[in-house]
Length: 144
Image (cartoon, rainbow, N blue to C red; front, side, top):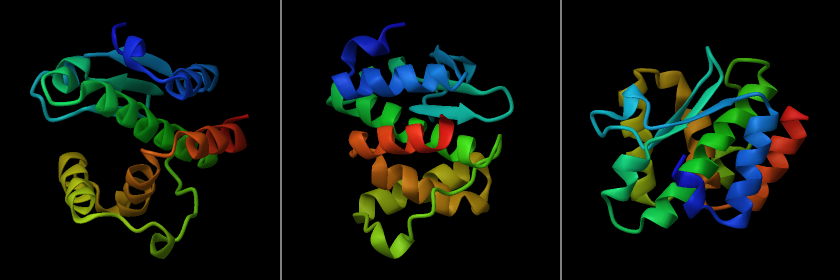
């Protein structure tokens, strides 16, 4: 795997926690081929994947690889909390202000997954994707 080379120490710790939560960590799976995904967590088979090739084509790949790992790890914590289905961590949306570009990203994610019920879980993930210490906290709280 190539993407761990770009991770911060917190990103590496998060990846270790994801593995300890029994998620299959993959890189550049077939879902990545069309360039629509940066990463995802597939709850049915507990797969956590990063689309390194897509991210490396853009600007600031180190930043976006780390943000993607943090974002997808939030979904791992949500899945641990929901016992194999996504359940919001429970942070009120009013306490998670996001800039307009991230609100657009939430809409794009919902369109991509065709699942409108994911608004809260996606909002949490986009809000936490630049807060690795909080992601670590939630992984430990809900997965172990």
